[in-house]
Length: 221
Image (cartoon, rainbow, N blue to C red; front, side, top):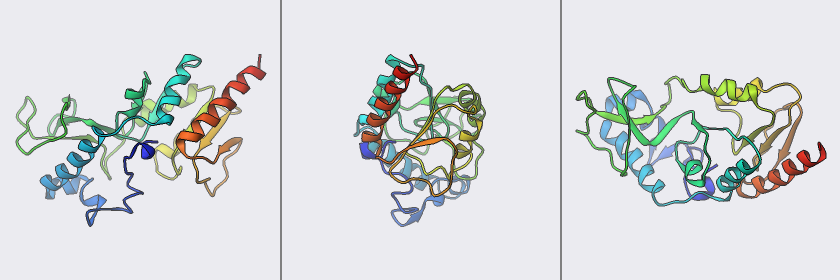
């Protein structure tokens, strides 16, 4: 979703970051073995986030709130949906601009600058860590995402390969017979029933989807 804003995905990195495997900078084991390296990785991503803007895809989705009740479930950890104006955003994998206590996961803080350092502590005195779901960690927000999908009258999947679980499994919770759209330049090589594919990048695909959606509503009148 945010690739066209200039943010690299793990896929773009080819599984590597400055010759490190991403699991060496995005896992509990990495945090235990080399905290400075992990913080350097996320500090660089956070610094880059302050330098980019929402793209036309983010803005197009936010504009749909003029007609529809939109709820976003995102695997992205950036805040570009919110900056584009979307009101309801659930982050499955955490948020880059937040940090949390290493001894009390309920203590979450907003970071208003890009750098987290060794010695930055929570109010209980423990080191702060990125508020990110790392490889090998559970995804607790998935349980909040399921009822959102179950209640949806229209489901749109944007900019994902549909192979990363548990997020990819959310499509199975959609009500039978509702319109389902998948927007991605790379059509999945497996069959999904009753899906309209828009094989476009996000910025152009959202525009096409918006036209299809408004036509669909107009035809139902």
